Structure formats: structure tokens, C-alpha cells
Image 1 (tube, helix red, strand yellow):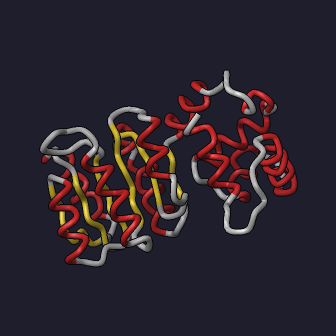
Image 2: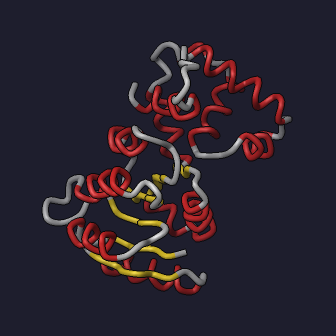
Amino acid sequence: MRVILAEDSTLLREGLVRLLAEEGHEVLAAVGDADALLREVAAHTPDVVVTDIRMPPDHTDEGLRAAVRIRELRPEIGVLVLSQYVERNYAAQLLTSSAERVGYLLKDRVAQVEEFLDALERVHAGGAAIDPEVVRQLLIRTTHVDPLTRLTPRERTVLEALAEGHTNAAIGQKLHISLSAVEKNLNAIFDKLGLSRAEGYSRRVLAVLRYLES
């Protein structure tokens, strides 16, 4: 795939460039700030952008704002955001419009090469890849909030796998349950969360956003 990287740490940036090249991917550009990222995306046609959230000049949310902008202007481009810590508001912002071609990983996950590459492939393929630790902490933080407290333990594990970006088939394999059981649990989750069946809305996306924004 064709990738553009944005990371202000030279060591991590060069490490990612080398890793992706070794895996046969083409790195179109590797930059250290959000403005340069937007310029490179405008000049090239990457399949996926990998960006840190905090970058110069203020080291706040420059990378995230650039990622959201890219998703607005070029929704066909996948965006994989890297974060040092679990930041619930940032994750919610990234997923607000759609949970397609998007990923949110903690930087520690990059060191686990296979997991990082798997997340990159899932985003490139049009899916989502949310760090399991991000999902775990978000679920813990929202256990006191209705209607999430109405979910059974099984439904909660299915929701966790859904939030990580897994398909129904992958959820079944991960939890060792049948596809019909996955569908049954998802329907129960959607009903308990009171999610709309209106045309034009993805209840899968709404289910993830419901607890991200709680």
C-alpha cells in the first residue's frame, strides 16, 4: 500500500519507514508536523495515513485535527492515529463520522509489529482497528452509565470486539461462538442501547460511539 507518515519523533518515524519498506509498502512521505502532513496528502494519493496525535508546534491535538480534516476531504484515504495514552475525547472525534478506514492505536502497540501491521491492513481494507486497551479502559470508565449497565457479560465482550473493528465472523472466531450467536448478541446490544434502525445510520458505529461519548 501507499503510506504517508507523520510523527515528530525522528527515531520512531524512521523506524516505521524501515518497517513498512521491509513489508513491501511504499512510503510516499515521512514528515514531522501536521501542516506538512496535509501538504503531502494534497500532493500525493496515499492509501493510508499514519499520524501521531500530538505534534509541533503546540504538541496538543494537531495530528488529530489533521486526521479529521483528511477524513472530511478524502474519505477514501484510511487514517491510523497513534497516541501515547488513552484519550477518550480524541477517539470519539475520530470515529464521529464513520468507523470505516480508521484506526486508533497506542504507540506501545507499534512495537508489536504483527498487531501494528494487522491494524494497518484492516484500515486499508476499509475496516476499523481500535486498540484493545483503549476499548478496555473506555468500557471500564462507562460501567456506571445506563444503558451500558444493562448489557450481559457476553454482550459486553461482543461490544468490545466490535469496537476493536472486528467483523461478525472475526468476533465469532475470537470468542469461539457461532455467527448466529454473534448476530443475536449484537441485536440485543443495539436494542438495549436504543439505537435507531433508521436508514442511513450504522448501528455498529452508533454502538461504539455511544460509550465513547458517555
